[in-house]
Amino acid sequence: MTGDKSGMAAEETMRTNGNAEHSKAGDIPAGQTVNAGRKARIIAPGASIGVLGGGQLGRMMALAGAPLGYRFVALDPAPEAPCGQVAAQIVAAYSDKDAAAELAERTDVITYEFENVDAEVAALLEERSYVPQGSRLLYTTQHRLREKAALEAAGATVAPYAAIGSEAELDEAVKRLGTPCVLKTATGGYDGKGQFVIRNGSEVALAYAELSVTGAELVLEQFISFRCEISVIAARSSMGETSTFPPAENIHRGGILHASIVPARVPADVLAEAERLAARIAESFGAVGLLAVEMFYGEDGRLYVNEVAPRPHNSGHYTMEACATSQFEQHVRAICGLPLGSPELRTPVVMVNVLGEHLDGVTKLMLSPDSVGVEPTETAAAIRPKFHLYGKDEAKTGRKMGHINLLCGDTADALAWIDRTGLWPVE
Image (cartoon, rainbow, N blue to C red; front, side):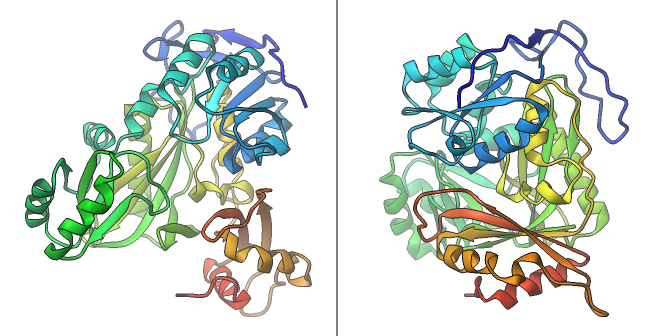
């Protein structure tokens, strides 16, 4: 497949949308910019979208954008990367400036599917291409301390924290914040990596020794007693239109997302506040595209923002069949300046991740009659599994290989279905 510039971008073109489901508070007047230094554009269907990263998020973005008429080119060092299987691909390192220049030449707008983008490459792309998400948001979200300061500036509550520069500082902070607490690297780290849970003072030296060798700055966070973890996917377009998807209740195992439950089993007023909070953060950050906001619903009834991700998110995969618009289509709409789609939830759903250790069992399940779901009975509604495998070449333990969206009448039935398969045993 090939992708070339189509010249379909129209600078400073404004659109209006009367859809009452979306907030228009952030709309920008004609001729102004969404973020400082970036002219708002409409990237019309027929254009090419460049994606930094060729993983599963880029893959699902391309599959969602193709029906809208967009073509995609991914930059990824792995040959036949998941996104490269469904779109054109430039095989090169993310730090390769020549490859980045080629991506800019072949596309009309560039987005990214992961946060750890090389700063020099990001600057080059902003200079040579249209990158509506910009580098400022990356700069903020790539560093936990900067991110927390920005969240507090947006009016969000975060867990008490302290920057750590030495073992002595860690010891003092642990005494002040109490145990348990969590020491994290300020940069890098995901799916439980780059973290150490300190359960008592005797673990201070071990925690510091283990994480300080990374060379990254460190941050200590007070442990929040919470009822559950939730996340909200907020969208903000280059035209300033905002929208939020229904909050997902997230269950983690071993630091990796296991399942997302929607509707979340949380009071309605809390869910409404979570959506308002996510939208406010997206506005404050000047986000364009998606911003996933992860929160703790505390035992004290308050919402604590844990972290944000400026891209499509694992906890938003449920939207692919359960919502009127998927998170991936919404991201494409947002960066291209199209009107945002409806985020309406059409059915209860449970998303369950397929890791490397589950793949063989899930493949066998897909070949069985059970793959089409469960018919309704007098005591339970129908369950319709929707399978998504990412095309990765090696199934490693803990590696995300796919997910299943279980469309259902009651999320309790979908959770029971997961248990009955025996593929996701409770540890």
